[in-house]
Each structure stands twice: as structure tokens, then as C-alpha cells.
Amino acid sequence: GPRQCGCALLQVLVRREPDRVASSLLELTRRVAGGGMLDREACYRALELCHGTMVLGGNRRLDFGEWHSSELAPMLAADLAADTSPVEDRAMQARAVQVVDAYSTSLGEAEFGGAFRSVARLMGAPDLVTALCAARATGHMALMHVRGTDDPPQLASVREHSVFALGLAFDLARRVEGEECLRVTLMAVSSLVEANGVALEPVVRAIAEQLPGLWERAGDSVPIHGCLLSVLQHLIMKMGYSTVENTHVQTVLFPLLDYCTDITQVNRAETLLEDGLRLWLVTLVSSRVSTMGQSLTSMLPRLEQIVRSGLEPQLSLKVLQTNAKLLGPQVVESLAPVLADLLAKLVDPVVRSSSVTSSSPGGGGGDNDEMDDGSGRQAPDAERQDRADRGKETIQGAAAALHFAAFVMRLSPDLGRRIAFPAVAEIARSLPGERFPAPLLEPAFDALGRMLWIEPVCLAELFPNGAADDDGDRKIAAVVGRWIEVSTSVSVLTMMSARAQKITFIEQKGAALSLCAAVFRSPRVARAAGTQVHGYARRVLEAETRSEVDLDSLVEAACSVTRRVVGDGPLGDVSARTADMLASDPLLTMSLKEAVEGAEKAVRALEGGK
Image (cartoon, rainbow, N blue to C red; front, side, top):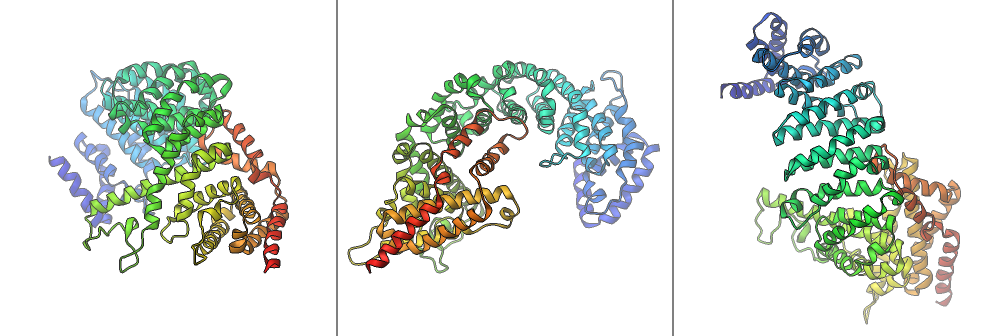
């Protein structure tokens, strides 16, 4: 229509002639106070479309704070009835909400709080169009100043008015009927919860009491279930186990998890499973076994079904890992054959692509060359994008397999042999290849280190020498050299963070202990890479001695990484279980000095025998 064409034309003009368009809009803002409804509506819509030109990029042509006070604030403060107020007044109030939302980053600290409250207030407007515009704007403005650990005054203003806003949002949810309208309202609730965190703890019961009614209204609506997932995830992330243990939350939480993870329904597996597994993971991390153990155990048959299907392995393996921390190794043991097959399946594409010999003139080819289909022609954009997506999915799946393999070997050496060894062995054989994906090097060496600690002679067994050459020894030396290179490559960001440095030291010490064990137990490894390993382990030992790192500080640093998963709220038992595993981990507690001395003896014994 003409209106849409006019909007498109204005956007073209503002890109080509920003100064002239801005000048015209400024003149329009000065005239609009005494103009008619059409002039005012045109001004609001044009400002909304051109907000980037009017206030961003260092060219603040419009003093929005002043204009908001004189023009928009009175309109937002008006109480308009749905049946008696003119339609044009209600339409202009909705348009004013959208303009404030678009320009809210331009409001000062003192102005933002008043603007947020005035917009949130209109979620209670009798006119549903205005109320829904206010819900969208409220959700956006609530999260606008959420940045890490910062607590700016604007966020304090959001929190000051959030209980009031949540009440109006839930009232609006009861008023609206359409699926999209309910989705918009629930997203506003989710954003308010995320912006507040533990500040909402005094009213968590009141929030939880609203959830059962919303669950009953959801029916088979995928968008509404998705919104409920988001609300619950933020509620649990931000407030921890007190939310999980709330009876009103449980009335919705476990039926929702059951609904979204039912993979027998194809539409749910495709649209809700990923978000359902994320909520499941957050629930586990925020649960205490003494109060939630029975409920968590009752979900295990569904998890077994998902793992057997191979769907969403990046998340399903994390959920299984956290269940094993909380409930014990038996959770994994019952699935040992299935998991061994799944891990092998996930790493197989990487193993095959790493073993492909490069054949193209440019040294590319194989799976890593997204352009080459073997015919010499260039693939269409859609096909190249599809290959890139599949490549990314392959890397993510292999990384999930390797992380889980390392965990299960730490959990139980016996389970590690049965579940992780076959997949890790295949990955290890691929490490000497130049085509091995760089993003997988760290998880691959972490898993290999666990495997070496359990079976120190396995490195020599993985790379046997030929009948007439020592090719196996060269591969051992190449793997060890690459391992040491990856382990000692520390980014600038890591150097700036004391916690990251401790995590890096944990990884380096584990690698040094595993490699020293391999050198001590295998003459072939000692001959091929003993000098490299001894030098590396000695440097790690010197760093440990200089920094006087103690076990408690290392465990605390590693658990701090876990705490970041759930934001503000208190964790459940998973933090203590993680700390217990780390405190008893031999690759963290064993004496590195003794390992270095053992490797040195093995190297000298070989030199003395020459």
C-alpha cells in the first residue's frame, strides 16, 4: 500500500541523504505539537524508522530526552478507555510506545526510569494493541542494560518497577486470546525475570502461582511452550534451587520437560527438544539431591530414549554427565554399549576427513573444502552454506563426544575403557594428520591424556612401527610435539584472567603427568619423545613451584567455571560434586615432581643403553 511504499522510500532517502532527511524530521518535530493527528502519526513513524540517523553514530541531531518530556510523556501518561476514547488517540499512544522503545538508549539515567515505568504501565491499557506494544517495549527495555556483572542506574530503575510490570504482564496474559499475543506477553515476563535475578526472590511464589494456568492454556502450541521454557529457564537460572523446589513451579516444570522431550512426536523433536534439554540441564545444575533426587531419577528413562536416538548429542550428553555427577556412575553404566557406539559415530566423520589425502591443486580437497564437489565446478551458495552448516554440526558433535569421553574416564576407569577408549583411539590415530580440525585439538588431547593415564602404554600401541621402518615412532613424536604446542599456546585473554590461568595450569599439569606416565612405562615413547616430554614437564613443574599453586585454589577456579552456567542464583549439589571429583582427580593431585623424575630416569636409561 501507499504507507508501506512511503516507508521504504524514506529508508532509501535517509541512507542517501541523511543530513537533509534529518533536517526535515527535526523541523517536523517542532511543528507536530500544533499539528493534526496525521502529521503527528507521520512524525512518530518517520522517527521510528530513522532513529539510527537521528541519534546514533555520534550525530545526535535530536535531543530525544527533551522531546520525550515535552511531546511523548504526556501522551503515555493519558488514561484512554477502550470504548469511549477516540481510536486515533489510542493509535497514537501505541505509536508513542514504539518511538520510546526505539530511542530508549538515548535517554539519560534520570529519564530512563520514568520512561520505563510509563511504558510498562500501558501493559494494563484497555486497548490490547497498545498493551501488546507496551509488552514488547518493556521486554526490550528491561534487557537493554544487562551487561555481565555491571549494575548501571538504568538497570536499577528496571528492577525498581519490575514487580509492578510483572503483575501487569500476567494480567495481560489472562486478557489476550491469540497465540502470538500470549507469546509476546510471556517474552516480556521472561525478560523481566532475566533482568532481575535474585532481586525477585521475595515474589517468586507469586510468579510461580501464575504458571499452572499458562501451562493449561498452552495446549499443543509450539510457540507458547517455547515461551514457557524461556520463562522457567530464566526463573531457575536466576534464583537457583529455591525455584526448582517450589511446588507451583514443579506443577509446570516436569510436565513441560516431559512434553518437550517426547521424541516420539516428530514435531516436538524438531522444534522443542533442544530448548527442552537446555531447561533440563539448568534444572539439574540447580537441584539438590536430597529434595529432588526422586524427580530427577524418574526422568532417566526419557534421557535413555534420547541418547539411544542420537538426537541433540551436544546437549543430551551434558544432561547425562550432570545426572551422573548427581546420581552416580550407574546412570552411565546402564548405557555403556549405546554410548560407546554413539561416541564412535560422532567422531567418525572427523576421523574420515582427517585421513583423506589432499588432491586439489591448492592443497585442499575432501570434507574441509566446501567449494569442491569433485567436478571442478563451484557449488551454489545454498549448497556451500549447507556444507558449512554440516561441517559445524560435525565439529560440535565430535567435541561433545570428546568432552564426555574425558568425563567418563575421570568418573570411572572401567567405564572409560568400555565407553570412551574406542572413539578416543580413533581420534588419536588422526592427530598426526594436517587436516585434523583445530577446534578439536584441545578436547582431543584432554581425552587422550585421560586415556594415557589409565593405559600409559596405549600410545605405543596406537602407532606401531612397520616391519622395515620406524614410522610409528615418528607419529608418536609428531603427536607429542603438537600436544605440547597446543598446551603452551596461551591467549592474551587468558593471561589477563587469574582464574583462566589456573584452568590452563590444570590442563598443562594433566598433560605433563599423562605424558610422563607414557614415557616411564613405554620404552618406545621414551625413545621417540622422551626428551620433549621431560623438558615440557620440567617447565610446568617450575611454573607450579614459582606460583605456589595449591589444590584448593585450583578446585575453586575450576568450579567457578561451573557457577557461571546459572547466573545469579545458588547452585544445587552439582558444584560440591564437581569439587569432590576434582579434589580426588589424580591428574590434579599427583606429585608432578615425582613424574618428572620418573620420565628423566626413563630417558637416561635409554641413553645409557646406546
